[in-house]
Image 1 (cartoon, rainbow, N blue to C red):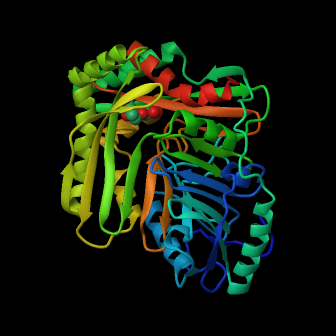
Image 2: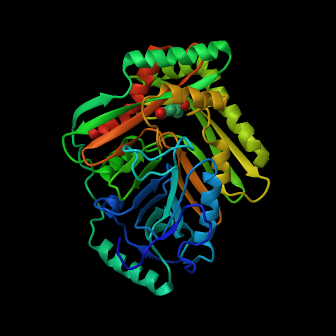
Length: 450
Ligand SMILES: C=C(O[C@H]1C=CC=C(C(=O)O)[C@@H]1O)C(=O)O
């Protein structure tokens, strides 16, 4: 943080401004290029990185406003607090460089940030003091502060600071993996899957996504921005995110799955569920894809997700289109994907859609209550923010959220990874085990020092 102004904290149960302050002011300037990793690499303060497959990249530092909430009303409370934080906001710059609140939610609303997730509340967003945004419209630096002079001053100081940073930064190699520890043994996993299958057999449950975590001790410090840069090269059609907390913990990942994107009344989402590996040859690749398309089990698993998203979105929509299923190919895995688009009936905040959609049965299950109960009974680790909505929203309630998959939480020399898979009737515990291991690979490979 540059220390010239305090943060505005909007938390607790009172919805009055915490500091009685006036509106936020923001100002932008176009930049020559800058290395995004370099902007967030050594920060000990709050830092965020957000990048989408369509090429938007944003990094942020410091806290102009912090919004936190807990419990079942957390989506609503964040919205109320955001309205106060953004009330009267004056932005001098292009739309792409406007202030946005970045952050996310925990998977469960009853989340309490224990040791692993220290600093990560059940809902937490920051409006950064400094944003660097890159899109087709160029690269922009934005400063946010409590008044015009402070914003202009911050902009000037960061412009000078960025001029000293490299425009290219080597993406390096991973620190190397010293050892890994599982929270779920193979025996425990088999038992968890079999218990879920019994519930499915009894008719209490149709689908549940069970997960595992893998704790990785490294040979040296992890550089999360560098790791994300390497993930960008291997997984260019995935999101990338980093949420770095002052506690020194950083949640990061390269998820393939969009939860929702909203601009005005246009909404885009997708069902992404069903997985097979990549083949060694184009023929083997296609054979796996065919196997997935033809599998009754995968079709059921996927269909439940598409149907739940359609049903959740319908009450908000004037029209809604469920497109044809396609195969989504990532470097190490293939998924079944159904794009879903809608036009909203009226003016909505993206967080209303996030609340309606989370968790989709791609990460939760059907029916939701029985799936949540099964997850709580089965899992021996704290999901925290894994598989939960991660993204941003702006002053008018537009925004974009990914599902926090293919993710991990890092401290200096450890990273805890998370991955899961959908269990439906006919699931085989051994095949589901293999699928989970495949989903650990993207980050594990980049940590391994290949
Ligand atoms: C739960 C995860 O993946 C979800 C997304 C795509 C495919 C999935 C599957 O085939 O089970 C999962 O629903 C994860 O990556 O941890």
